[in-house]
Amino acid sequence: MSDRFYLTTAIAYANNAPGLHTVYEVIGADVIARWKRMQGFETRFLTGTDEHSVNIAQSAETRGISPRDFVDEKVALFKAAEDALLITPDRFIRTTDPDHYRSAQEMVRRAYENGDIYLGTYEGWYCPSEGFKAPSDLHETAQGMQCPNHPGVPLQYLTERNWFFRLSAYQQRLLDYYEANPTFVQPDYRRNEMLGFIRQGLEDFSISRAGATWGIPFPIGEDGQTSQREDGSWDPEAGTIYVWYDALINYITGAGFPDDLDSFQRWWPADLHIIGKDILRFHSIYWPAMLWASGIDAPKHVWAHGWLLVSGERMSKSRGNFLDPHAVVNAFGPDGARYVTLREVAFDKDTDVSWDSFVRRYNADLANDFGNLVNRTVSMVNRYLGGERPAPRAAGESPLAEGWNDVLRQYGEKLDGYVLHDALDELWGFVGGANKTVDAERPWDLNKAAKAGDEAAALRLRGVLGDLVETCRLVGLAVAPFMPGMAPRVLEQLGHAYPYLADGNGGPAIHDLLAWGAITDAGRVTDTPAPLFPRVEAEAAEGAPA
Image 1 (cartoon, helix red, strand yellow):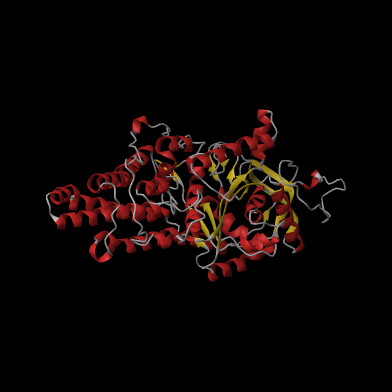
Image 2 (cartoon, helix red, strand yellow):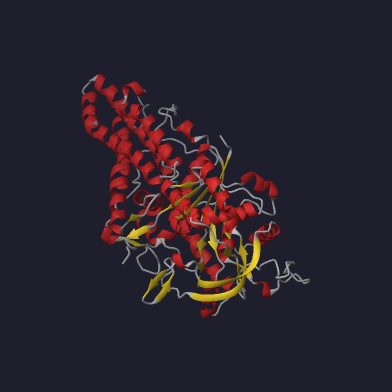
């Protein structure tokens, strides 16, 4: 097993406060990072913000502030939302970071020296929020041409002299890479979409903006020499690096390129890029070619998730149908917010969601199923056994023990396969089985019989309650990547120590602790069980989309 794992999210466009749909992939990536840390991998998790664009410069000018002050303000909002959701990246990268400037410029120099960058003239549509757009990527409406990702942003028709990247030279290499690495792009149907696009033929694309000043200076002048002046400033005539070329490079900056090549050698290639389906082409076609042009390996895997939909329409700030992540946290708590988002929203395709569906999921799975299971298990151990924590029965004597290994195997496979909603489904099937065990075994009746002198009932009572305590321990520990704040509280109520740090580092390999009966030390449950997930009423919760 490799001893390291490097994963990234797309970097968010720092033009507004984030909605839940913006941080959704970051929550999922945080779960994967925690799972890897708890498995024993040395894990590096990168997320951050994309801060260079014409639109940001225009928005800042409208407000009478500098672009830097504008993005600083927005970045603070992203960090606050991620903190509220217990996101723990190893680095929050910004494309305004000095090492990223050096990284992007070095990538340009290398590609130029390799013969993959040349001067040309661009003529076509430009989206200030996203960049140059091919006509096939635009929608023609009664209001004119529109970018499907930014329908309210007026497009600009440009003709300007730019530097181009020779993407067409990498068509066959990309096809060969896809064939040699069949899981490079996942899910499979997304891979097939990208293969279809490559086979249609690839066109070179512009990687600079003439006249722009908010961005990373393009390091090469028209004469092929450096555009840096003797005083260290950059010639504005050279323009800036096109925002998408700049943004993609953050992944290698975050691994140490070009300042710390020892770190870069350790962490690159990335094991996993988690991105939205709308930017898959950039990550699975443009990005590998850019890396190869600079003598760098392509990433190992790109996972494309779908969109959050509201009544069939993409959730977005511009449409006004978004959820505020702080409102979701206020309603469900950070753990509940993480759970309902990743349980309700499939990680491999578009999913229609609503505030009511979140409330129903929270109440059914957390308040009723798991929260109630822990509460009544601890209460019954206190009431019937004086708080002494009983040992679970062996696999041959316990239906719950017999089923756990299969549940754990499937849960791990789903998590390792990044279908996070399916992983939770496996685990909560086991929770449902435990609640059925309580109803079938009726510990309250066993306790009455035991008090009346029935030794067999007394023995069975200890066995049943031991199985339920163990179930709560295993589920609480297994679901810790999803609900890291709740997991220590569950184990504390059961009288067990929680061995991991706040980010999932520092403990033993989690699979050692997830074996049935792995913890054999005697102990006591807490005297008073504390409710983990208070019920939420839909009409009382704030933050529902209009």
